[in-house]
Length: 85
Image (cartoon, rainbow, N blue to C red; front, side, top):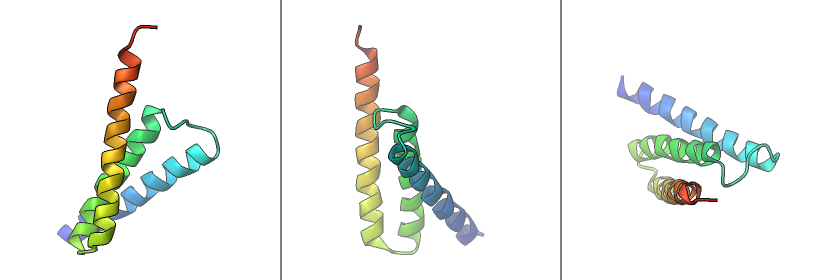
């Protein structure tokens, strides 16, 4: 049963990251968009679960870095939006 959830997480993560890339590549989102960063964060988190389960550690590390970058960007976007105009 666990393997099924890991597979689902992998596919959801892949879909989220690809969707984020497609949206930014077609100028439907900007890199400062919360939606873009959440897609990257959630996608990489799901892919971390999948790749770690299958012991694909290089991919796990890449997705870990991707997650940290998204988290940093989300934090920065939050700080930027809290500043008075």
